[in-house]
Structures are given as structure tokens and as C-alpha cells.
Image (cartoon, rainbow, N blue to C red; front, side, top):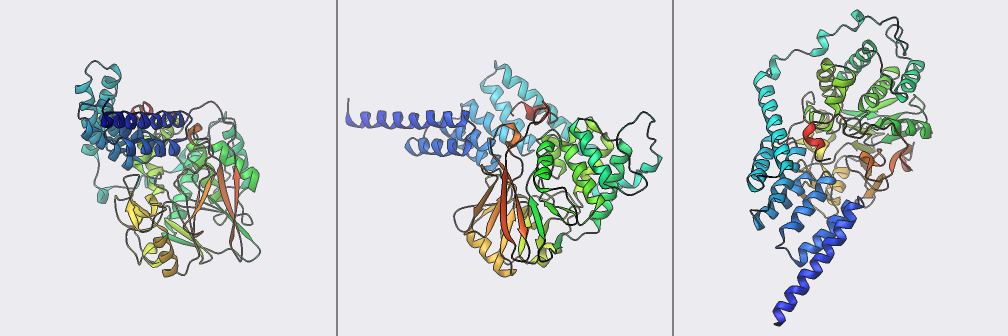
Length: 486
């Protein structure tokens, strides 16, 4: 055998060894590890489309849809007849809500694999999704002409049937007893009467509309304050947080840092619990908008379907309206900046710029508001493209300059699942906190929350494991199409 052929065979063998290890890591739900191993296979043999498509799939599992699209596109460039490349890219486009781009990819899958029943099924579902989207666009009312759905609801006129045995709000005041009883009913998978659900959500709308886009929180010396990350509809884990750290109150205040809903199938229970505590005592709990508090995400990832199932269609519009009222960021004692996603594509952004954002809208695809909700930190300096395909990645130098410019000490953000429930980065100046343990019932991660003690505000991180929940799978209410890929 000629030496160059032996070298080539050895290269192929080494790359395949990395691929097999990556596949094993993937099966064990160790997606970051599988990405590293697929990367090693690609470094040894970059002309193999399978490695790129497999890495795209792993990126999709970590919600890194921008990276998944890049990898799948590279697989297609290497082998334009490799149907899996189009399939992976279509799935990533779908996850981002880009149905028309997804449709083109699945049409190509069907052309390449005309007898594949799975490809046929997915193409049909994608065509239905695009048709529904076109219909909704055709009947939609321009924003300027839209009337608030909240203005058309008078919960006082809704009768409560005599046989209803659940908790009741007497008058206009949400009490601690009511919230406790409601949570107990939710644990037993009972529903709150729509009259009281309307009352809570409408009261929250009034409270949130009065708040600025950047909220200042003051924690007196000797007192503490707890920050939680994404909960994502994991109601039983939310209850566990309260059991570990106490119920929200003026003496035990919380900030929940966005992504209350979607993916987990108890999102209605989570959002009504958080909203009810806010109604009970506005200073006991603060709520920040995440990228999943938006129509486009709720349509795909389950909250819209869950609301239609457990409440009704009017609530879908009402929640969408209320989510547009949520603040975008908080500052604790003028020292700790808390935001769901991250920092910005430009330097020099001041807290006053964030306060000035007109947030009463669906999140735009670029600009400060988009970046607050979507951006992620990166280990290298400077800025880079977003793994997600929205927002950007920012380095420790960006974090340092933002803190210096605004006389702050620390950035706390959420938005990313972490194995230990948290991660400290950027020379200790940035902490990610994620509060949905065993995310989607498959990631095996811990959850975490951060307790700050005033006046020094040193972060004390508490981690916890997932608790059991009723046998309702994550994404149970998600669009049919997306469930096919879950």
C-alpha cells in the first residue's frame, strides 16, 4: 500500500473513532462533550458531511440553532445529495420559527428521499405550519389599530359555579392564604377558576405597565435577596425552590429572571403562581422578561397550546399583552446588573439607555432590547456571532467595560442550561444562573439560585436537584411539528 494511502486510511480511522465517541456522548445526553468530539473528527477529516450534520444535531439539542444551521449548511456544501443535511437545517430553522426556510429544506429532503414516510410526514406538517402562518398574517390587525384585549375583559361579570371548590379571591386583594391554596390545587393538577385567573393577570398588567424598563431594587443592610434563573414551566421544581428558600415575602424577596414558560408542561401553573405572589406583595417578587416571554416562542414551544387547553383563547392574547409589559432588566443596590440574556453589540451603553427602551412590543430581531433578551457570554475576548442565530456572543472585556461605564460590580444573567445550575465567567464578573433542573426531563443538570446579602452583596449560590412531577412530558402542548423533533 502506498504511504499516502496508508496515511489517508489512518486519518479516516481516527476521525471515525472520534465520531463513535461523540455518538456515545450524545446518547448519554452529554451534548457539549459530543460537540467537542465531533469537532475533533472534523479537524481530522473535514470533508465528511456526516460529522457536520451530527454536530448540527448536537447544537440543536443545546438550542444553538445558529451554529446548527451553519454546520448543516456545510454538510450540504460537501454533499448536496445528503438529505440529512437539509433535514438538520430544516429542524433548526423550525426551532427558530423560520417556517418558510424550514419548508424549503424539507421539500429538498422529500426530493432526495421520495419514499421516506418520515420525510413525507414532516413536509406535510411544515406545509400546514406555513399555511397557518400566512393565514394569521392575512387576518392580523396592524399594531397601531389593535385594541387591548384586556380592555374587553370584565372579570367581575364571570360567574363562579356553586360546585367550584377551589380557592377564591375575596374582593380585589390576593392574600397569602389564597396563593398557598392555589399552589396546593396546582400540585394536585386542579385548575384555578378563570375568573380568578383573569383577575390575577389583569392586576399584573396594571402593576407592570407602571414600571420602568430598568427597575432599581434596594436591599437594606442586613437583609437578603434571591435571584432565580429560567424555570421553563417546571412547576414542581419551582415549589421546591420555595421549600428550600422560603415563600416570597417582603422579608424574603425574589427576582425571577425570565423564561417562566415554554418547554415544561406546567407553565400555566408557574406563571399564575409568580403573578399571584406579585399581586399579593409587589415588593416580594420581581419579574424580568426572557426571550420566551414572546408570541413567536410561545407559539412553538408549548405555552400557547397549554393556555388554550387549560384556560382559553382570550388568555393567549392577554398573556402576550402582559409579557410586553415586563421590565427588561434590574439593578440591585446600584451594583448588580440582572438581565435574562446579556450585553450589547456596541460599547458605551448606559443604564439610562436601557431605561429609555420602549419595551411595550414583541422583541425585535436586533438592537438593545433583542440583545438584552438573547445574547450569551463567550470565553474569548471581543464579540462574535450568536450560537443561537439571534443576538451575539460577548467576551470578558465587553463585560468589564460595561461594568466600569456604569459603576457596577457584577452581571447576573440566565438563558443557558448549565450542568451545575450556574457558571461563573469573565474573571468572576459574570454569573449565569439557571433554575430548571433536569431541563426538559433529559439534560441531567442541577438547578441553582443566588442569595445576595446586603450590604456587601456577595453571591451565595445554592444548587438543587430535580424533583418528581406527574407524568406529563415536556413539550406536551408544543406544536405537532416541533414535537416530532423533540
